[in-house]
Image (cartoon, rainbow, N blue to C red; front, side, top):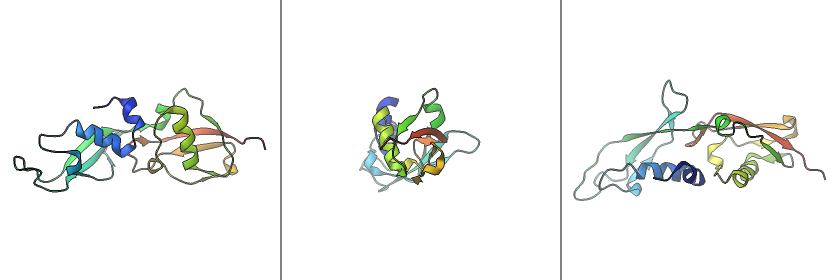
Length: 154
């Protein structure tokens, strides 16, 4: 399995697939599985489960797998990930979260995928700060982090 830094450079679903592939039983391949959206585990802050299903019940002649299984992983809290880092970007407003994610990806060499975040338009009404929020269905992130946005001079 890849280390954390390698996983962060992959798309969120590809990172989950990489972790699952490292734990597969004999006769199974990653393409044999379906992935449900992540769901939080009760009474935990960051533990998440992804239900894995089979595309076909008979994977090969030697192995028969039926039913579903849960794969448990931990999502990262955005505020913990960026703890101690001053997040400040020059960006014209109004703008989109997708464009802000592109800036974050370039700055940190980590894939910040749009499907992991609540997408909205960022306006000047935010007063120079924007709270980036993880989507509840994110495979990778949870929580939120505040980013200072500076309007470039015209």
